[in-house]
Length: 221
Image (cartoon, rainbow, N blue to C red; front, side, top):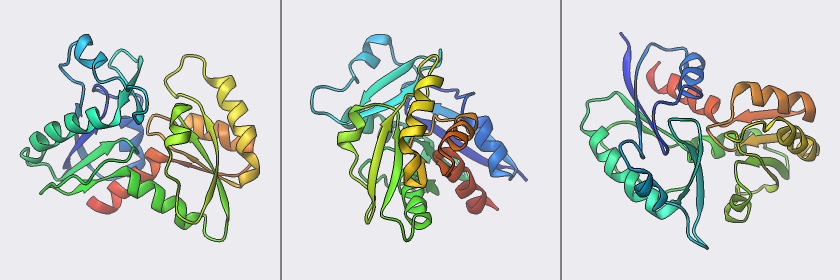
């Protein structure tokens, strides 16, 4: 019997660029339900969520494919409202589609928080290393990145939502190659992007949404 799983993007749903890949990687029967933190908001309401100077910046995708920049505190308030609704929906699992850092969400439904899932997995895989490469979607996030305990990080920034980002992705992969392990720290990076980075860098490359997909498999299997 398929499990009912709610996928919550910080942008707008649906996410045809992301959820189908996660369902394939999870390898368990799932009936997916997609919801976006920005669903139903007007352009003016979305614009009001843009980061102000000094605020943490998060990156996501609108339903038409355009990139959107969001302020961490304002987005967290929106997420709490939507999560409260999903928590009453009778789902077997709720999955947040963002590896940003938020204050703790308190839910009765089993919940996968990607930041903990992805960064702890990367920390375990990097055992014995002193440095990893971290690929982020926006340059501002480099200064905001709190780090992974015990590891120095070498950064590059490429948005997965920018048209024609292939050249920038190749440049970033070359810049991070010497680290030996690269974490693609955004749910929007695709498996095709991961393969490209791995081919250029010649090292292990972790794709955030694949790590989360395997966590889903373990949670429901």
